[in-house]
Image (cartoon, rainbow, N blue to C red; front, side, top):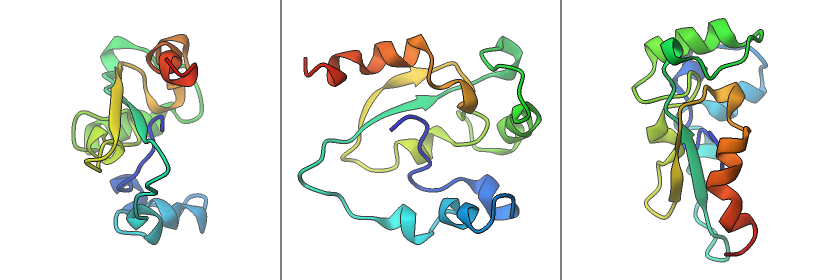
Length: 120
């Protein structure tokens, strides 16, 4: 799971953008309370972004990510706190990246997941 808001995102608390889908992203929503599947291995990659360092492409989401960085618990990727991504004890962290949420699918993140993807 790459930047997945497993415990929700506080930004969803004050937004109705993309309603009704955003309701599933609110902390405490039913989707954030799903139980572990014993037949599944859970791996995470979380963003630990700092806007002053870049690692975020110019996009329509950049102003939202910059606002999110300032308002979310740190560390975060501009949309999701690391604590939400890694919210369950049975998740295995593959590491953190310095990218914002919309840049979490770069070569760096692939490198973090590569061995798992190839079964090594």
